[in-house]
Image (cartoon, rainbow, N blue to C red; front, side):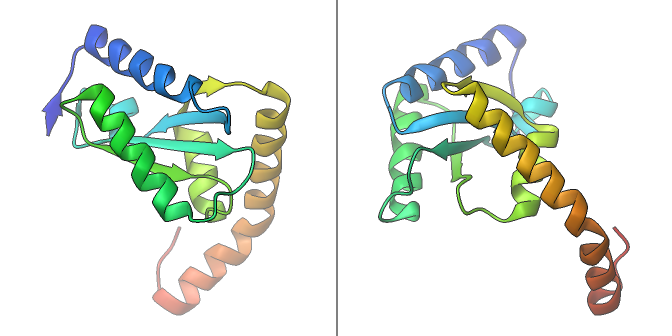
Length: 138
């Protein structure tokens, strides 16, 4: 685990924002995971929403990770595209993450509202499925 102070954390956020501002296709982005919640973390988790899906999401994510790690130099970054991501992932990013960048607040608000409504509508079925198939209470 790595430790980071508030000043360094702020500098990391600004460096990520600077990279994202150069990419017109990124409409909004969130930081989530241990980097947001704690002073110690393994990597920096970033979720981005794109104006349109790339031909290869995996290649896009890997290229963005490379670009961010070059900009940050000493930190590992994990990038995930929110478009098409599992509903539970999107919900947890919204619930536990922080907005890092928003170029279109209306689209971000629509995305958040739709995700939360769908997740809460689906939640009882998810709980039932997990309880019946895995014996897990959520």
